[in-house]
Length: 401
Image 1 (tube, rainbow, N blue to C red):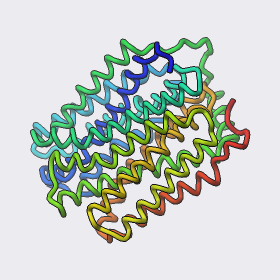
Image 2 (cartoon, rainbow, N blue to C red):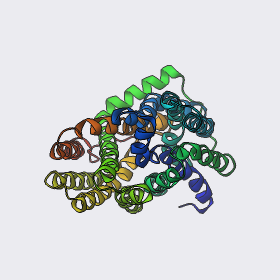
Image 3 (cartoon, helix red, strand yellow):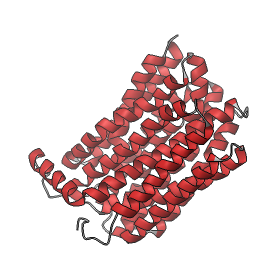
Image 4 (cartoon, rainbow, N blue to C red):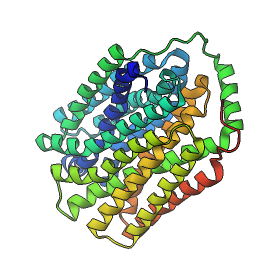
């Protein structure tokens, strides 16, 4: 890694960390919110889903704008909007007798901010580092920051909520402003002499990319969606049953929820260091991670024992952590710099699809049987593994030079 870029990387890595805190901190607090606001499990799941749906729609637009006007010019205002959204939600919970609708408005604003911040991190890493090895290492750090945020989130969210249930909303703007300061003063993006393409030319270029690279890109988009669906689905399920069936609440519940996420964080970091620039290694690493994820969910189909569940979820975290850095690297290194922001943003958008779908789908499946719920998770994980084998073919010369 280029030593002069260390502070740049640390500052950039703060963005996925902060954005993850803004969403995942709420997971352990959802049952409490359900009681405090007197809403249903499905309604409280919308607090996660609204954030993600807005991001899904706006992420590709933010990616295009970052290609046109520069990464920092999009990221910094987006962080400010996200901070404003957190403040609105926190104020509503603090001041209003019936805050649910206004909290959703705040979450809408947070989603707008998230769309213009976290997804642009990947192409920014590709811009800053020249060597593929450095890009892979940098993306590994970014994915680790993302997953470390997921590890920290349930513990921090639960701890803040023990003081007062809406404190996670109010803490989020503070985190955003720290990230704004880091990005403003410590990140120097390389200047480019190339003029951004006209929108018409840009569309033609993107269509050409999907025509030439379509199969493997579609596969990676789907796999990213599947990984996020499974991990957020499991977190939503665990957050509910730990409190309702095992009387595990507060910080203790946050620590238990952090177990599979800690495995995800560590395996993501190690994988980012090891995959290098060999795309065939990235393919088989992704496949191995998805097979492990499938087997873990099959295991849980046949047992409701809490220790079996937590062991399987720990191993699932390893599987997802192994797959994600490889897919990040394939997208970032397989697309020309001029379209990198848009394509990687579409990939990030598909990951948000998984996040958006998970809480409401799991809330519905939880009304049925435990085996059916985990059979669904095993099935979608297996689909990801099959897509990896069939459609990601780095031996074919289809990747952008």
